[in-house]
Amino acid sequence: MPEQIPFVEYLQLAPTPHLVAHQCTSCGARFFDRRNACASCFGTSFEDASIATEGTVRSFTIVSFAAPGIPVPFVSAIIDCDGTSVRGNLTNVTADPEHVSLGMKVRLTTYTVGADEAGTEAIGFAFEPAA
Amino acid sequence: MASDDVWILGINMTKFGKHTDKDTVDLASQAAMAALADGGVTMADMGMLAAGCLMGGGGIAQMIQKQIGQTGIPAYNVSNACATGATALRVAYMSIKSGECDFGLAVGVEKLSGVGLLSGGSRKDDGKTWNRSGRYGAVAATDGRIGTDTMPGVFAQVGMEYAHKYGGADFALFAGISEKNHAHSTLNPLAAYQKRFTLDEIMNDMMIAYPNTRAMCSANCDGGAAAVLVSDAKLKTLSLEQQRRAVKISASILTSDPYQEACQVLPDVNTLTRRAAEQAYAKAGIGPEDLDLVELHDCFATAELVHYDNLMLCEPGGAADFFKSGATWRDGSMPVNVSGGLESKGHPIAATGIANVWEVCHHLRNEAGDRQIQGAKVGLAHVIGLGSACGIHILEKSGL
Ligand SMILES: [Zn+2]
Image (cartoon, each protein chain N blue to C red):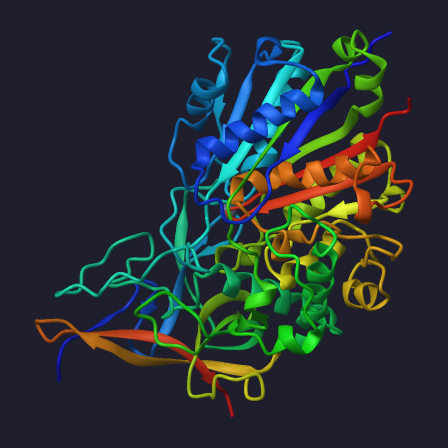
C-alpha cells in the first residue's frame, strides 16, 4: 500500500478520518488554519479539538464556472458539524438543485486527490449524504 | 455659525462600460476634473487627495496629480477591496473633519473590461511532490477541492445561508432581484448595460454558481468616479448656487468584520454591514424609514437580498417578503439600486464606492432626469469589500 498523507494538516486520517481544529483555550473559538492569536479573544494558547464527522448543510452553491483546472460542476457547502462550521465539497450526490438541499444530513468521507512522483497519495476530505 | 458638517460640493462618474482608448489614469483624471468643474473649484483649492485603483498597483494618486495638477498636497493611495472608493471618500471626509483642510478630492477608478468573470485566476498546477504550504498546510491548491474561492460561489452561499435561516427565498426570487436591477438600468445612460431581461432569460442564462446565473453577477467594466468635499465653514463662503447643490454627508462609516464563529469558512458580510448601518443611522439621526433611495452592494443578486435585512430596510428575517412586496422597485416604498446596481450599471471595483454616492447625489439634487426619484431628500450608499470592509454614507439634500 502506498504511503498516504492528509491533503491539509487539519485532516487526521487515523484511527478514523476526522478534522481537528486549533481551539482557543480561553474562549473555545476554533480555527482550521494556523493562528498567531485568537481572533475572538486575543489569547495565544490553543489545543487540538476533534470535529464531529456528521453535520447538516447550512448553505451550498453549485459551481458551474470555475478557474481553469477545476472540474465542474461541483457542490461547495458550509456544514454545521455540531456547532462548528466547516467548508467542503459534497460528494456522492448529483450536483444539481434537485439532489442537494439546505438542511440535508451529511457525513465526512475521504478520497484520493492524487499521487505525486514518489507515489505518495494525498487524501482529501468531502461530505456525502448520510442515509 | 458654521458646523463641523462635511459636504459634497462636486461629484462625477464616467460612463461605465468599455473604454478601449482610455487607461485608468485617463478615466480617473476625467472624473476628477469633472468633479472639480461640477463643484466650481480647481486643484488649487484642494487640500488633499485620496485615490484608489484596486487592480492597478500603487501610486494612482500621484499618477492622477501628474495629469490634473501637482500642487504638493498630501496624497493617499487607498486599497480596501470593493470598499476602496468609499474608503477614499472617507479619508477626504476625515481630513476635513480633522480641520487639516477645507477641500478634499476622492477618486476611484478601475479597468476590468475583458477580465474573466472570476477573480482569482487559474488554480495552480499540483507540484511533482507534495509539499505543505500556507496556513492550512495544504499539499496543493484548495479551490474546488475544499469548497469554492470564486466570488459568485461565495456570495451564492451567503444568499443560500439566508434562505436556509429564514425561508422564502429561492432561485426565482434571487433572479427577480436581478430582473429589477436590469430594468432600472434602462433609464441610466451611464450604465454599462441598459437592457431589460425577463425572469426566464435571467434564470436560463449561463449558470455560474447556483443560484447565480451570469445576469445575476456584477458586470466587469471600466469606469471612474470622483468627489470634491468641502467643510461647512468654507461652503458658507461660496455662491448660493454651490450651496444649493451641495449634498450633506450626514454619516460616513467604515467597519470591518468582528469575529463570528463561521467567518473562517464563509465570510460574514452581515454583521459588519448591520453594525455600519446602526452607526450610520445613529450618526445621521434618522432611521431606515426616512430614506428615499438606497444604492447597495449587489455584487450578486444573492447579496442584495441579505443587505435589505442588514440595512434594516425590512423586518429581521423578512427580506424575501420585502422584495416580493415590490418595495425595492423604483416605484416602490424603498427604491433600491435605481442606477441598475452592480449587476447592470457595472462594477469597476474602486470606482463603485463613489459612483453609488454620485447616484444618490444626482437624485437629491433633482438632476436624475428620467429616473429621478421625485422629492428625494435623504439617501444611503453602501459597499462591501470582501475580507471584509463595509462603507456606508448617508446623504442629505441641502435645505436651501
Ligand atoms: Zn479565544
